[in-house]
Image (tube, rainbow, N blue to C red; front, top):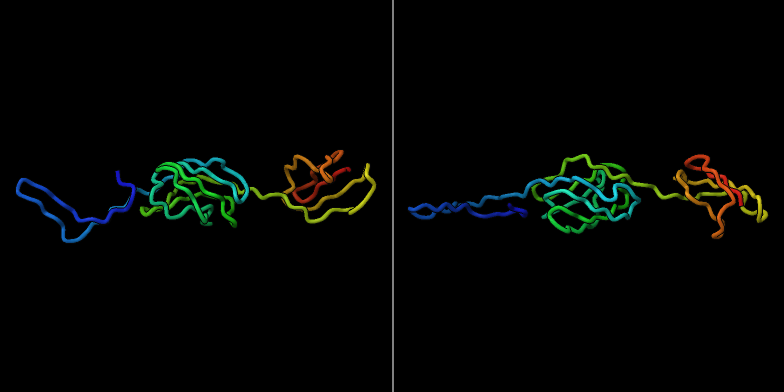
Length: 165
């Protein structure tokens, strides 16, 4: 099985002798296929193991059309790649000199939380209710103030949490 592009003449041998073509033929590797991702979700910068076939002679790996800057071909069936800046949720595709994979294997880009403001900006040590505003706050698993866990908190929406000091 060929894994890399080959440019060579065609040679035919018979009992009467050997014939060699005057021009070369270009033989391309099989188009890659993508069968799995591990993990299948994470933020930009996540190392992802892509499994499939035809991963030699890889020329590009994309996350929903955004090219990864670097990748490591571990074998003909495994690549390790870092989710690039600008990637969005969508299909991961691998390209080699034979073509681009066409399977719909999806990576979900998870947006990390960000705090844009909070109110009040000061208050007593106990029983102060603080409204935290930001993005991607859904799924919060903890809220701390200078390393001390909030007495309680409620995720009001993807953009707001109300916490008690």
